[in-house]
Length: 74
Image 1 (cartoon, rainbow, N blue to C red):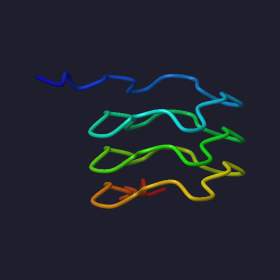
Image 2: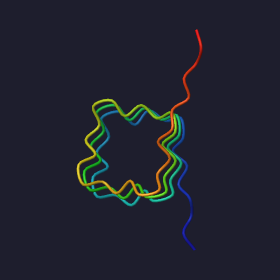
Image 3: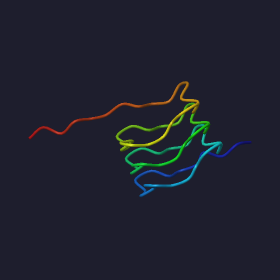
């Protein structure tokens, strides 16, 4: 049985996570600025409200991933 990885609300900026299996992982609210995610398996991962600015997602599998963003009202 595969366990869900909880990396929510973490500072993963500039992390090197290329070709890692992060399928089904909870990355919600995480800082992934400039993270290197080339070829990573992010299928069915929760990336809601994650900061992906400058992240390299080339060839990453995002099938079924939650990429929703909730904006706060001023």
